Length: 276
Length: 287
Image (tube, rainbow over all chains, first blue to last red; front, side, top):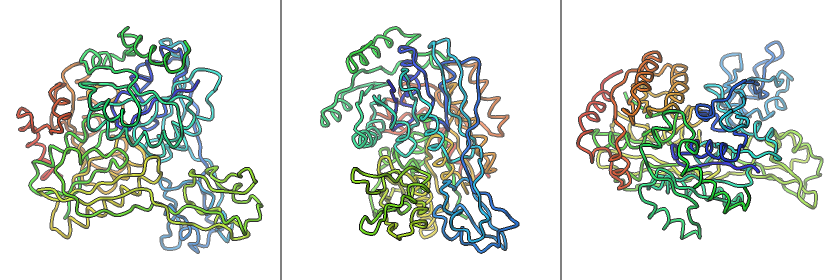
């Protein structure tokens, strides 16, 4: 079973819950928050393997290009621009869409692999399973492409936990799509509730089974009221505690340092899936 | 000269919005931008009066006219996003994975594909007591958030120029990818809010690399400090190595999330006022 952990608001506790679930289920852990991956500080994987991820990108053959500018005119992302008698690529805007190659009357554009990041993986003795970390190259804007590439490698036969990116844009969708169960982590504050309502719209469109976990809770009242309007209830609530913050600072998995959290999460999951 | 400053962090939940809202309340005149367009929380903490709103249209998307389509399949072949599929009647159609590149539009021999406008969100201009606020709502799940950020930043520059305001303060998105880059380009300085945690430190290092790439100077406000002095020291060393300057520290204080839950800013807690006033002065003067 593939479980995706998401949250509209950043800092709600996705990594805390995702690493705990990887521990409880002895599941492979996929860090798909590729431009700010942090799961490894808790899972401490060993025997690292690294694989570079490439994405095809246009390369202009200067001996063939006559700087007619057709590619720059047609590119919908303004990734190509003409300066004097040369055409340049701004690779942070390129979507690797193949259009420029087709448009070029000189046949001067071909697609060559360019590194967008890497996938690092290792064995976590803390979960007894694999930890797979998506690591976007600094300055790259191809987070979605990297996430989709890692998602394709997930073995659906094994339990897998996906630690998703914050927000409600295309990267979040890419981390939600493969999931058979989505766990939405909500900080029950006006901010967390606002961002959760956006995420719920995505989940409704994708029609995903859903479990809501409140984290860093000072008062579940407002959250419970908003969820009730949609016929939903939080499956578990974790209070805001300095002890939890301390265990994060020590690089501990919360379900390992606090047995209460282990039981709370396990029970919430069992009620939903009827297994374990 | 209009000065632009972005509040960034790498890690989500580090305190960007809490700090930005407090600074906005202290600055004499300012244009505020909420660049976290798909989790827009800054308006929750501000008293803003909406002046106008407009639709945000990202890139156009492809549409196939089934009447003239010969089902040759060239469009599905060239699509780099696997956004064209066949339905049960084997008719080709475009799914919501379309990124609007127009490769299919260009290649279709029957000219059956058109590019149509696609609304991806809404952008808002509001009045603050001491200036203006630009913010946006991306339709959940939509693409092109970077372009929406570039749009509202452009609107902010326009408003600032027209109204004679010389400071734009941007509440940035988390992460270090497209949205963060769209919030960084062309700013004069970054105020990095760094959470004193392993994750906060790691994400700050990524952010610092990004800022170095764009040659943007930065100040650092360390948040949730005092729980692990060893980690505090490590952050200090890292900030110095990354060319930043620590401008202040906010301790781990449960009163802060309590105040935020009441929709109050850090200014509701008098102990933090001098620190915030000091940051305000630095943002307006240092280069």
